[in-house]
Image (cartoon, rainbow, N blue to C red):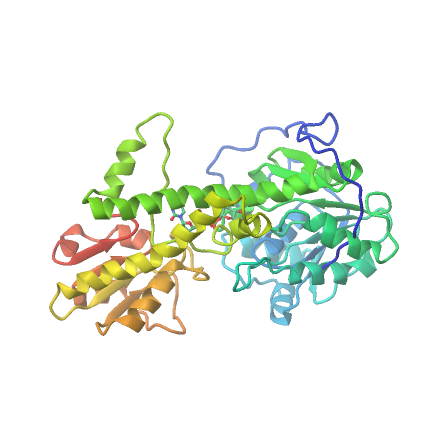
Length: 448
Ligand code: SAJ
């Protein structure tokens, strides 16, 4: 689903404006360490409870937590998802994704009559689009879900309404894809209906806390749109809500994730250089980071998830000749799983009757998300290219469609090679004595 409309209302490109620019900060939030669910129960530092009706399209990792948070502030939310099992699960007060505290929030929103899910949008005051924007096999942005969401809401949008795109999008999407679809229905974007881009910036595992606490960048297609959208976010965000134009807001999101990708690529490149120079990369980074202006990130088996490994391509695709560092960083990070596989193969040659314990499948520590995980890529390659038995351990999953999972104890008992792919807390607790008897390939540096 999606909507777009072409319009030429180019907003003020400056980031700090007297009105709709940097907004007055909200009162200070509670101390860090307060559980997310408690933040929602503390109305005092927030703005008055709202009464607007919001239609949220896409009920995944961003749309559902946002919808339930809006309900906790008094908004009436109509959630939309194409998947009927998602709609049915939510309407029964349950959730289909793993995220701390989300179950309680959704149950309360549904039972309180504020959240209702459906496969179809309905009329509302504010429309929010939070659907996936993946890349295709040639690393080009696939914007079909945004387009389809805009087309689904467009017939329900009325004069005075506000439409917000939150999905990570190439620069120009709000103005060149979403606005024209709204205008097909006779609405003048920026005058009859207001349109803005506001990227989500939350970290899986901390979504409900970060939705409230993080600063937000809101870029309207004109000043009136920015002002309306800023006022909306200020109703439920405790961080600062900062106004800009839509193109800048789109680029801010891509820049944040590209910054992290480039910095991880630097660490990954160092890890490969250090291996060939006989230096511990972990010790090297620890020492270099003692410099007051150096802060190197951590190497790993590669970069996974659907954000950092994807979003930089949106910049590269639009700027193929200019985005040289960003492209190279993607290539370095994408090459890392293959490098790890080669190291394991060399190790296997040195061991009699090798048995490999592969520790971790998820894309980062202490989550159950294995989509686009470099750990999965490594294990798949080892299974394909080696005869040696593999024992795969993933404490956050009950089963996996491709690999038979072993318990950590069983894997450590049988294996003579230990390959650490994810820095889960369970692996950090392994007795070092047990590891001393084995060949260790620690891609996360947890046993320094
Ligand atoms: N990683 C490393 N070394 C590091 C840090 C991360 O190898 O030092 C790897 C992780 O293991 C993982 C990948 O990078 O495979 C990404 O993990 P992450 O924790 O860096 O980020 P995500 O993908 O969970 O969330 C990111 C966040 N973006 C930034 O920190 C700039 C989050 O704030 C965004 O909202 C999210 O992307 C998103 O949805 O775009």
